[in-house]
Amino acid sequence: MESIEHYHPEFVKGYAAQESACTCLACRHAQPGFPYVSIRLKNQQRESLNLACETAARQALLNPEAFVLHTEPKPAESETVLDAWHEALNQHCINLAIHPALTLEGRLYAIGVLLSKAQQYRDQGEQEPALLSAMAEQLADLAEKGVLAQQFALLPAIPEHQVAALKEMGAIRLNLDVPMAEKMAMALKLSELAILSPSRLAERHQAMAAQWQAITLFDEQPWILTNALIYQLYHQVFPGIACDNYGEAFLALARDFFCIKMLCAIRSADNHQLTAEEAAMLVSAFEAWKQQHPFPPKGDTTADYSLLCGLSLL
Image (cartoon, rainbow, N blue to C red; front, side, top):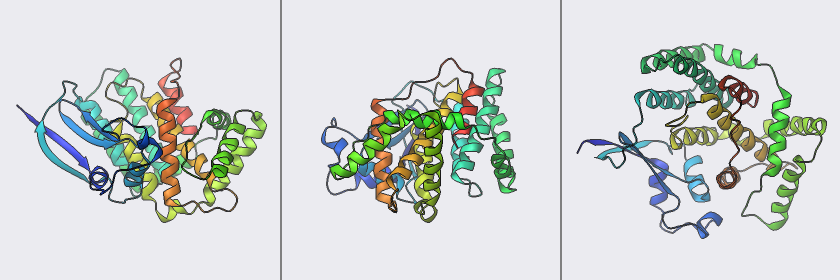
């Protein structure tokens, strides 16, 4: 039987090496085997963790070496093939996600540009991985020269999309392992977003965006959000093994990071300096809620429009 590559990221190994089992809220009610996840394909296998487990989230986000990959050969256990086009697209997205010349938002922007071009190629029936490699190389070069950052800065603001995304956050309910008073305060602040008028939501977004900018944690430990991005790309085999609407996939990714940033802003309000452990807790709780309440895809929109909406959330 032909061997395939079997990937074990450092964060999975770190979790497995723990001496005691996790007792977080998700693990207390989980099925056997949680939070381990195996993404089995005919031509590769990826080991991962479900970040609804708070300990798994800490392992994935707080370790700068979390995504160092350990590989070994093993027999294939699936007939689902990751075709060369989507394998290349996934890898180029990951490469852009770790580009040292770009900020988190710049990396997401670069991924959006790559997906836009990839969608054009796909719609024209052109799916040669070399086309993606050439485009990714151009984007990396533009990043090095500072051109991508300049282009990103020139993106027009579309406040309506940000206000709509903030209003959707009013449905989020986080099961946080914190004192009841803190849990209720977060729940009330989120619930309020569902009932505010558009003008009040726009004001609230401005205040939350300013609060986000005041958080120093992610300047001091930039790998936290970088790891959160790499995790999504790796775990989902982004934009998806059978994805045909790259704009919709990008919108979902951008919306996730919009929500994470706003949740961090809420938690860090009232002169509270966000800690790394709190950031991991918020990402974990959001992931757990999202798995039970996924955002519905906007299936009646074009890939280009979804991509534009995603860019507007950066």
